Image (tube, rainbow, N blue to C red; front, side, top):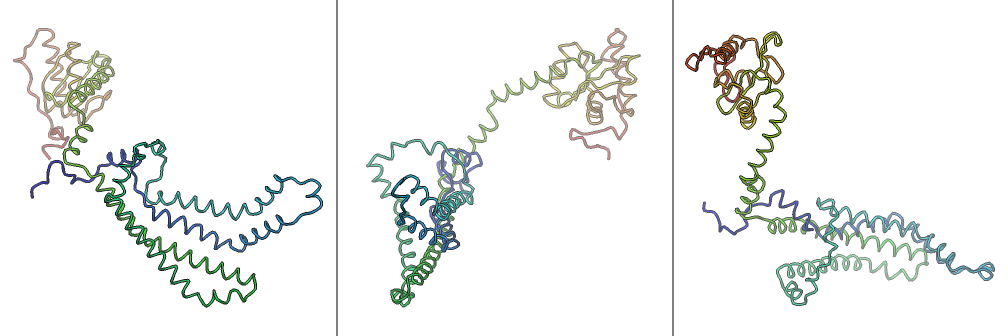
Length: 379
């Protein structure tokens, strides 16, 4: 199947694109869900503390309309105001706290909670009346208008149905006592608000998937943007070369002391390298002073040239030492004969007793024969 146009945003947003969008304030959000949670939290608190709320208001009114001789002799407006406010502080403060928690819970449920300082920056472009007029008649403006119409029709219909069914109760409220009428009004208020909040959750159930789809579509990327992001992540050749150079410098610094004492370096010839030390009377067996693959192997070869350490290409023996020994460990005893032959050859070359033509052929035990992945090539 042919791909779409080069500039078409057909690819899903990457994790990096999503993080950048979140930093810029473009997060998943649903006004319907936030409104539903806030309204339901407030209604639930009022329903649970309704009698106490009404009692607190009654007490505040009673205290506010009651005067004594002390009030006349030494009236303090601030003291009276603080007393009246403290009477309703808990029920009113509870509503505020419940709705505040709900307002935080809405973005948390969508995974969009967080502080964005950029959202506080004034955006003077939004004050442009021409742009505002364009936004009003944009596709997003018509979508928001449609949502508002549906919301009004749905909530209005539910509220109207509930009130219609309670008309008989409402008619006789005036004949009942004040306390009974207040209780009936409270029950009706709770029923209506809970029903309206539930209707908001129905709207939120539709709005949240729509917002997810719209945000994903808005953040979709072109194939070229994906390639550019991968290129930036991998780094251009110049940056990679600089990183490799710094890594090799650190490796050289750490291996310099060991390479100063190396007797021979064995290579594969490019992928692997091991440096061995054997000083008769000091070492009981050949010791690995450096080992590495690829870039590390290149650093070992450079240090060997710098310090004039003999280098020999023995691919099978190099791999065997690399996969069976670690730095500052003696080589596997099954490699003693092979390494002894190599060291003897190096000694003879240094003392002008042999040449390259006399290089010994090395045979390894089957258990010591490895491929480049460290797997035994015999078994």
